[in-house]
Image (cartoon, rainbow over all chains, first blue to last red; front, top):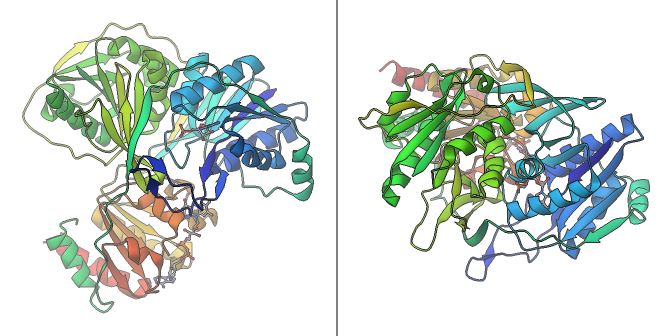
Length: 247
Length: 317
Ligand SMILES: Cc1cc2nc3c(=O)[nH]c(=O)nc-3n(C[C@H](O)[C@H](O)[C@H](O)COP(=O)(O)OP(=O)(O)OC[C@H]3O[C@@H](n4cnc5c(N)ncnc54)[C@H](O)[C@@H]3O)c2cc1C
Ligand SMILES: Nc1ncnc2c1ncn2[C@@H]1O[C@H](COP(=O)(O)O)[C@@H](O)[C@H]1O
């Protein structure tokens, strides 16, 4: 079994979101970077569990980005995985990133490609599906459970107001979310070991981008809260009914 | 021409598909063209009624193979239908998140997933989308000839007018999906959390799962879905699919009522697109008040019963 986990770098969940250069660039000053939570807690940890269950499993990580992503990749390797590949590319939209990962996947011949449900900065939920289409593979999105029996996978995915259980024969691409696995904290042995794991840098393949970010906007600030005294909650209900007209 | 993908659940058109239809019709008007729709699999709803949302023609592929969802099989059919269209519009639900990216690659069409407004056509084709988990917007320029827009659920109103759409069968080649759906478990009687107009949500301030009766009663009266903060689902007080926030569902209802939730930034990330936010919390310093429109500083166990009584009175007329 050969697994590829797609790892992206995102601002910490508490990062202040601001823009510079006439609202065309994300202001990185003071931002802490983390592994995108869905990639780390769910895709990567589930892949590590599968490797623990079958130690012959080969587990690779891939990231598309610049050299300053390396600390994040090392952090992922500290959790687990045999080696990582970074495609040295910063320009490019979701399609382009998917094209880079697809090229790596073709070269490596993986049975299973795992992504997070979405990046918490771009919120595309797109790259997994794009990889699957590029490689002509089945795709199951929003998986909350993944079990393997040889090359047969049983996957539970979240759908509106419920869950769907699917079966598919590998190879396949699966995007992961909460439920897949429990968050892990890297231990000292993992952190030390990660330093000597291979991190191969590859140059990007030629690929187009279909979209560009023209600019960013921040949502208009809230007007400020209107407080209603705790002894007259019925006044809140009246306002919601008659003034805000939301109930 | 604009093609709107109409999604179904249990053979019926989902509520947010009407938002996509309205969006598609308004986009068509803006571009001086018409909007048509595509429905896959067996549907029991009256499809001609999509005309009420501005759709001129509905293409159907009523092949029972499409009653079982497989993103790849769906994409292959949609690509055949979409051949003559310039823009394809989806509602950004679980189907679209699996299909739209595939279709984007297949049609070489730039995708904007999570759109919140009609495109700005003054300088190319620029669509505003939600980014940074609701904390900002990005204006995305689509540079390909064909475009795909996946419209965030609850981001666009539906407008109902008079009209009847022509319904025509589309003769597509349909493949058997490689993903087999073994079963679908619906949460009984639930209003879909992502589509709900009103959501009543509660956090650790409720003290324990035995106290959710009040939350459910209020939600029932308002026709609302229930949601919760992450620790509440982590402790199994509530099911995981109710968890909203950065690592749970992102929702944008018309009204979000938060009870006993502190309003941590990761919680807000999933709910800050709600149009009206009401916060009930006993701590005046709770960060949620900064993101709220209305609030009560008070004990939920005293405030909620009175709110429930007042709502009952209104509902009784
Ligand atoms: C990477 C990351 C991702 C996360 N993702 C999410 C996410 O997706 N969703 C999410 O919700 N959280 C998420 N969290 C957790 C988040 O930081 C908060 O810890 C969590 O939202 C707190 O939940 P809470 O408000 O229910 O509990 P608390 O923070 O404990 O707040 C309880 C509130 O109830 C109030 N209260 C207590 N008793 C009463 C009473 N009788 N009446 C009225 N009010 C009362 C208190 O004043 C308090 O404000 C994430 C955290 C991290 C680090
Ligand atoms: N630059 C990247 N390098 C590697 N994987 C990525 C990158 N960006 C996104 N991904 C993967 O694709 C998933 C979906 O991303 P998105 O379509 O941007 O929401 C993420 O959860 C990651 O698993």
